[in-house]
Image (tube, rainbow, N blue to C red; front, top):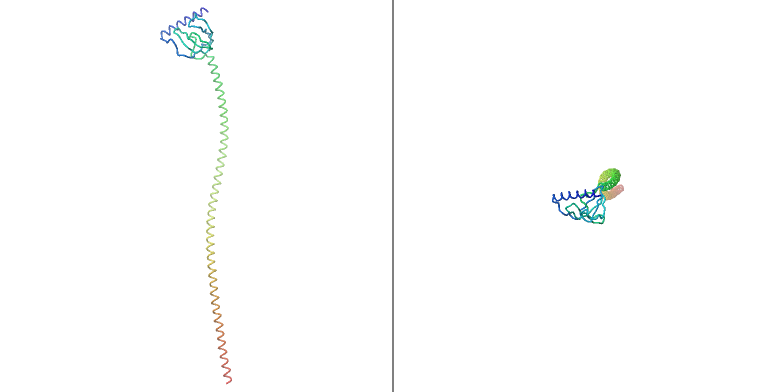
Length: 230
């Protein structure tokens, strides 16, 4: 354990010298996030040196909230509800591979579930597309049928209009014929009246002529008788 501490101390010293050479700041931004390196167990102490008491052992993958960092490479962290100091060289800014693997597997499972859900949705959409295609074909056939029916109605309407026009012309012609017949009937009645009057006149003239002839004959006959007497 002493050898390990000496190695850690030398590493910390080298890290501190390197930070000083680079002019690193004495403290980091508050509440930074780090993790313990893979396959390590780091002791967390009450202060930034190996002489301070160990208060906990942090295993690989333990998440740390960085509170402070000094020039010797020690950082004050909060982990598992406690605060203490550890050497910063045993930390990393990204989760360890095991944790990343768990996260990746979880993400992969989510992606696979999403893929399955999308596949099911795609199948449903394909089925709906097939139903829509059938409905479209049925609607197209119905539209064609309605167009044919409309054309037939248009032709029938045109024929009906022509028939109505012809019927109206026949009705006008019949009305004119009735008017002409009434005129002819009235003319016949008038002519019949005129003929009746003329017949009466001629009949009266014939009677008068017959009476006159009879009177003349009688007169002539009387004279002959008187002559014979004499």
